[in-house]
Image 1: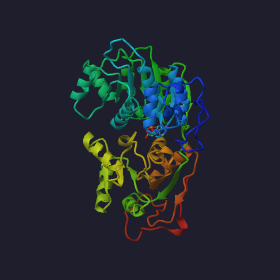
Image 2: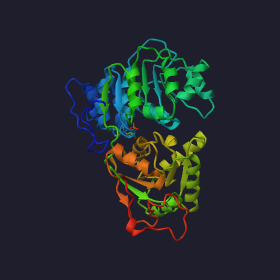
Image 3: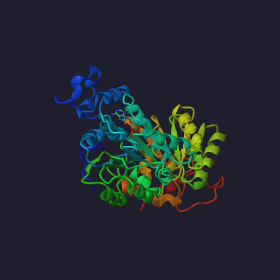
Image 4: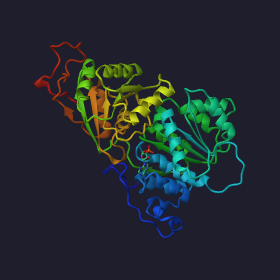
Length: 438
Ligand code: AMP
């Protein structure tokens, strides 16, 4: 269990914490624009403050308020925070601050290594570094699998300050002698729980073995299962511990509900709920890649603009789908858990769990896609008989009962596990409105 500073549990996760600017801050040397910034209090260099102001951030988010001072001091950090809380800036800003210190040393290898579970997250982190560091002259590179390694190798040869990587591709490049890590000063493990879920523990250990022992370590995780606590204990030295979304709590700005429905009726139910124009930008989660394709086809046939992202799609196809979703050209993005990690799209109105995840932590991750940046969001879960135990696990983890929607035409009866649907057995039975949870 990690100690928590005052958390944002009772307010939107990006709700700002008002900060006063102390007299010893460097705000006096900055233009008035930056004096208004709550970020000045951290003592960040002015090019970074200017970049933050250009992004429109005026007030640090809770994770930033808690984490930045520790990272600035060079301490190790264990951060319990979901994507969407502003955690990237929480580590990127103080890292950029340190890298912007004048230095005459000629370096070849990266000084900062950030490990992330997916290409999407790795790219987003790199973009964030570029945005926050746009008034600094630093080099950033991202490496991930699924694309040719030529340009990644060339970028590493030219020399980089900050390397963001997925573990598998980085190990490949290391084994070819293309990714020297002997000058790494700061190591960041982002979404560590997901990296463990994806089986990256061994690659992570092999990578860490090649990084200098004397370094700063920052580990972020949306949840804190025992495996993460063990990893943290092995990697971090006397870490500061900060938390904004305590493990197993769901974001309170997400309104959640569950539909009991037969598996075979789920696609019809999905079409039905999508008749509501309030579902303006929705992510639909499926358990399998084939399932994602099926749902996407079905939605397209029903005239809904939808595309799928999952591990079998090329990097380009995934990027195009994400861009179209971001631009509002797609109403629905159908995704598997892994592909959706780290997706940073504002204004997602609904998250739909077409299938209930078998790991309750994934539910927390999934619904965290909506209600970002303080907005309100809606999470709908379609639960068949076989998924009831998963639902129970989620309710146990989140310590909340998810309200049941009982007035829909595909309501299923708990005593009929997965019957073949017929016209006759569709529809609800008033006497059997909800399934028991116990
Ligand atoms: P992250 O959790 O790092 O993925 O950030 C989630 C979103 O919050 C991103 O779109 C950031 O651009 C945005 N963000 C981060 N920090 C702030 C801030 N202090 N004020 C407003 N937006 C922010």
